[in-house]
Length: 79
Image 1 (cartoon, helix red, strand yellow):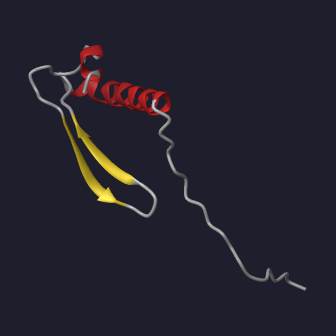
Image 2 (cartoon, rainbow, N blue to C red):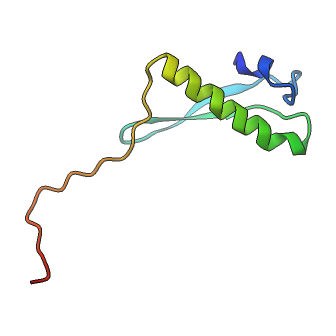
């Protein structure tokens, strides 16, 4: 995780992990574990990590799937 080098609030002595936590209908769920230097740094670290992940996804043309529902049937109105 190269992003940890960019984040000052990350505890550099803790080795981050990335694990596959679930296979969903149209996606793979990953779990990233990092350690902030202190509690107050937790949320800024999470936010910056997400920003860096989305930058890397876009750079590598990885799209985030959104749920799509297709209805095939007759729509009934209240009439």
